[in-house]
Image 1 (spheres, rainbow, N blue to C red):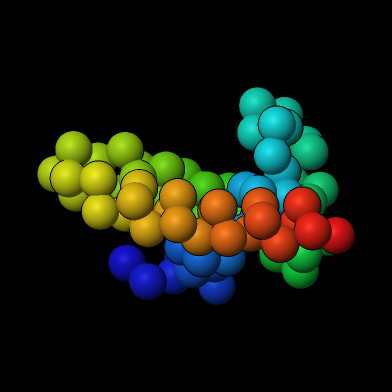
Image 2: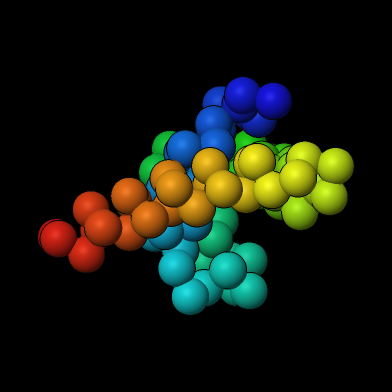
Length: 81
C-alpha cells in the first residue's frame, strides 16, 4: 500500500501533523485536508486505510514506524514556521 486516493503515508503524516491536536474533530480534519487539496472522500478513505495499516499487528509496527518518521519531520518543519 503506497497511496490511498492520492494520499501516500508521507502525505498522510504531513496532514496529521497539520491537524495535530484536532484528530478527534472530524470537521477540523476534513477542513485541513481540503485546504491541502484533498476531497472529503479522499481523506476519509485514506485516514481509515492508513489507520488500519498502522495499527495492524501483522504489520509488526513497520508502517507505524515509517509514519512516525514522516510525522516528526513534518512537525519539525511546521514548528520552524
